Amino acid sequence: MSPTARRRSLPSPAAADDGDELRFCSTCAFSDACLSQGYGKADLMDLHVLVEHIGPFHEGEHIFREGEEFNAIAAVRAGTVKTYVLDASGHEQVLGFHLPGEIIGLSAISQARYPCNAVALDTVMLCRFSFPKMAVLATRMPGLQAQLFKLLSEDIGKASLLAGDFSADERMAAFLVALSRRYARRGFSATRLHLTMTRTDIANYLRLAPETVSRVLKRLQEDKLVRVDRRELEILDPARLEALALHVLRH
Amino acid sequence: MSPTARRRSLPSPAAADDGDELRFCSTCAFSDACLSQGYGKADLMDLHVLVEHIGPFHEGEHIFREGEEFNAIAAVRAGTVKTYVLDASGHEQVLGFHLPGEIIGLSAISQARYPCNAVALDTVMLCRFSFPKMAVLATRMPGLQAQLFKLLSEDIGKASLLAGDFSADERMAAFLVALSRRYARRGFSATRLHLTMTRTDIANYLRLAPETVSRVLKRLQEDKLVRVDRRELEILDPARLEALALHVLRH
DNA sequence: CGCTATTTTGACCGATTTCAAGTGATGTGG
DNA sequence: CCACATCACTTGAAATCGGTCAAAATAGCG
Image (cartoon, rainbow over all chains, first blue to last red; front, side, top):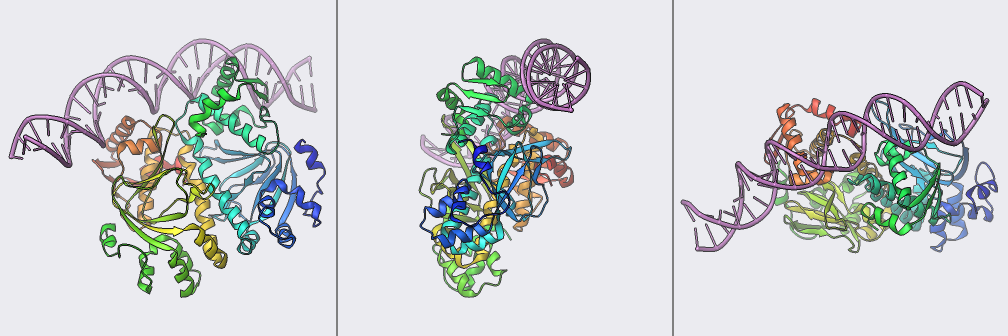
């Protein structure tokens, strides 16, 4: 059930080409989408020749860096990827955290260069998709094209979540609820989360001071909304936490 | 030279189908992109059968509303479109302003519904593109597909601009510099801007109180960075204004 | 067991918001 | 043409949330 267990069963480097391999990429969104649209095995094989299973990346290793030439997007198969930029004075600005099943690199398409850095927060496994090849294939597979459009469009809306002027409590609640939902969608527990990022990363992402994150978490714990122990967090009262997050998440 | 003059010369309702018509849509990004990639006139005609010139929308008229079924994206030909959402308590949250040449509706693709409202701030003319038809056409025209990917990808990065924790002055400067650049790219003056939105809209967009916008603008004027008279704004010192905006815009 | 990085806690400070009032444009009906 | 209403905008004073600074507690690790 754990992503770790699943990861171990993977052949390490490039894609295998037997039928079984397809299942391993089920978290990649693309196979799912295509399978459900009645594409034949031949098309799926086409899709799979442009996939590379890469990794493991260890904590602190970079997947790509700002300014590097863009040639591929990637789906996270296991672990957490943090994307960030550095401002003029070298301070980090966290753009997002990417969990298993999610895609990184989409924002690089427009400039043909990665506009941000991507680093592994723990042991990360990826499916790498050559974007040029994928675009060509998409002209033959309308379902794939639609999926790409959909993925891109989704990311447009996501970014504006943390943009509002919300209180520290609302931001934090929204962050936790969103994490919970994203994990739940991939079959992980919705109530017990392992925070793979530091408080500083969370603070940075939510545009708060680390001290504030600490205080808010304490407050949420005192109010019996969550229970926190270091990086382990249990959501005790999902309903009230979601209510707090409602203004940010909008549903 | 003014957008008003250009607008007058347009045939009012649906697309004409003679060669001249192509030029009218030159602000729509798609024609430009395709022309520059060696597509034949036949392809461009295909592109143009799925275009409708619609408008005028008058100040306050809605182009689409949140929850409505998505079927088309649109390029602004003239005027300004504001996109926004309403939170639970009915307060408006401005997502963006769309100037001539820019595309609205891209964030609706993933859900097949518009996730926000779009309203005209002045007299607005649009090119409406049926998205389903466009997607089909894109499978035959890789250049069109690439252009769509690019447009979508661009919008992902844009939203995170105002997400940082910047000072009111930096936000305001960034807003003005960005406006200036976007107007300049379309052939308008880079130093003399007509603010088509209210102070409240600007405040709402920048996540500031309207009072703060007023005070910041006053400060910028006292510092001789800009000259403001009601909705007319002149950038007096582009270099210093850009320096202020640098942290936000990143270049 | 020290060493270091992360996290927590407390006290204070400051930018921005909020509240409240006032000014100025624009438009309307008398 | 003017009194009046309305809306956008400005200005000032007080309140506040979150940031900053400083220091202590806690965990991770060789």
